[in-house]
Length: 396
Image (cartoon, rainbow, N blue to C red; front, top):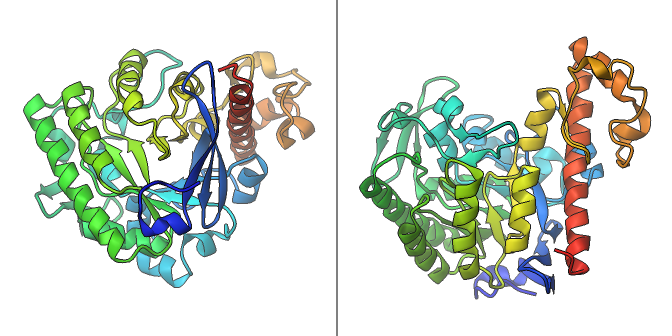
């Protein structure tokens, strides 16, 4: 138990390794936070605006969700840190007092939101959503007016107002939110910038993270902070980032930045990074959470994964099952008077047929997205529970 960092958070935040597989580097652990314990490896549901899309938090909790991920950038613009702090923080604002929350710094959204169509690279229908903007430099800065040593000046996508985000202001916002785990400000460039530009970005991220950590340590407030490994797919820069971040007293490590243009490139990068990160600090993979990517990353020893993958698939009429993806739109489901997945014990599969969900989808009833989302989130949490059991049996 404990994070091994020597930080004040040692008293209220810790990572406990329960079992290390004899077959791989996979591990079962417990992440202890002020608002509850997270069994790892775990899928972390994205709740961008302090809510998952199309799903009540009570439904998410019933599906097995423990840790959720809220976005500082969006909450900074609406309703704003002052409102959330006045409500008593995110846990009180969301009425989620007994389960933990992680917030990001806002950096990824600042640099990519205006290029949503380019901010994820896919390769084939089952490709993961890899964090790598493909917009040609310098168009990736189109919504960013200035990036300098102090921070970022950008225009709000809501009303066009000017917003300044610095390492210190990002930390202050996350202090107002009161999340259990917070992330330092970093710069997230596209994958196709020059090596010289990438190195400049990595060094700037390191300086920003050092400032963020200093601001955090001035007023810890029972929050843990994870450092973020950057460097794109360049292993020399990734090594520099590993050396910098692991020397600092962060409570955990997150792998961020561009992870490549396809799954093979991402796996090569993770195989390079993970042998250097398998200590007693928890490791989080930012923005990756599709089934195949998780199943390939768990044996490497990664503990938590956040992604909008299952909720986004649900909103587009996709259902995750043990036999593969099911498309609600398909006419073959019109008379499928059976559960979505006979192996699934979620409330959707217990109460409704696939034919009924097909009808709701065709009729464009909002309930179709809600039920599909509830099922998909349950599927992901159940998949992670199965992974933990297999690790305990040394079968992974």
